[in-house]
Amino acid sequence: QAGLGYEYLPAQSRLGALLIGNGQVAEARGHFESERSDHPERHDQLILVEAQLLNERGLSDELFTLLDHSLAADPDNIDLLYYRAMAGERFDRIDILERDLLAVLELDPANADAMNALGYTLADRTDRFAEALQLIQQALAIKPDEAAFIDSLGWVQYRLKNYAQAAEHLRRALALLDNDEVAAHLAEVLWVMGHEAEARAVLDKALETAPDSLKLKQVLEQFTP
Image 1 (cartoon, one colour):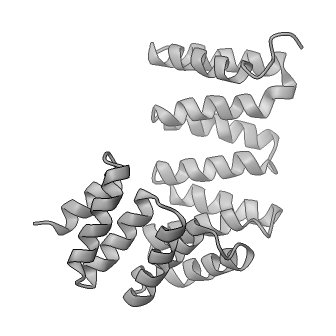
Image 2: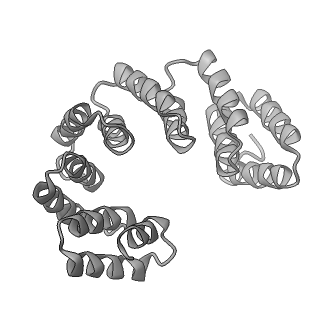
């Protein structure tokens, strides 16, 4: 179809962003709705473009309305379930995250990313550490060298107060994935263990590549008087 080349979705995203930026949220939503009825073959992609715009601007009510409506019509859509789960995490609705990731795992029992995301969130935001550990270990059985999963394993060990194990996993994760969140996790564990010089070295190196990282700044503020 003419006009639906690779520029189509970025153009829709820009138009939606302009409308929402001007406070025309209802107009933006109406535009996406009519695009979806005109181009049913792009339906799911257009849902995710609209969801991303609403998510970025913190419009949680509109975002969940959109995703709930879409999933009511297509309840086994793994991409939309996963997206709504991550939105649940962003807007402190851990109940939504858990419900949707469990639904993903019902549909796709070997989905290691869903196992890890649920395990990490349970470790980070609840005290359900035993469940978290089990989920993360299941994810690692499927993808043993996935840095994000090794980071999750380190974090749950930290929450269980197994500090030496935590540091070992987080050092390995950071070696595989030079990322501000992993560095922040390792620095926090090292600080709690009393290895202040090493913690500072980890933070300093990470701040060189990610000087604006909130995660790194939070750890610095937490442990620097």
